Image (cartoon, rainbow, N blue to C red; front, side, top):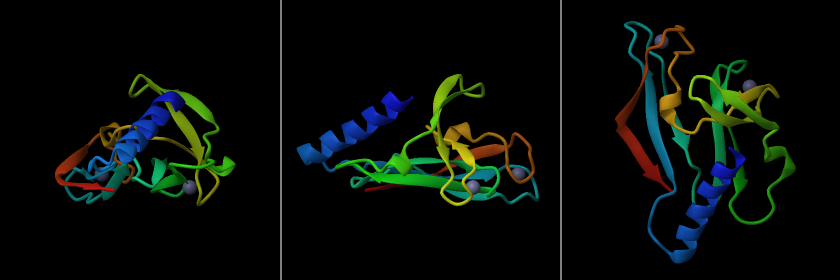
Length: 137
Ligand SMILES: [Zn+2]
Ligand SMILES: [Zn+2]
């Protein structure tokens, strides 16, 4: 999926070049529907006008982590994916990155909806709260 991520970056870069006032990133909140769990986290995907971003869940850190790199100019090596892995939950390949906090690995999310199983209570009860959707640049 390196190509897809690249294309998304390139498309946003092109829009930026054209001067269109379209925001590049989207943030929603993902929450757990299980009573008493209370898990909730903001998920920002797509990067911004100035940067690209890969975000995923680090099982070791028990947190959403991300790697950012500038849209223009050279991409630092440490922000490059280690490779891709096929995600059987989505049927798509996704890039694997090194967690910047613990040096473990995480699978980059393409959509917030891919978060299905709650990392706190382990039930398949996550949902996207689009009322908290936020576009940003
Ligand atoms: Zn980590
Ligand atoms: Zn939960």
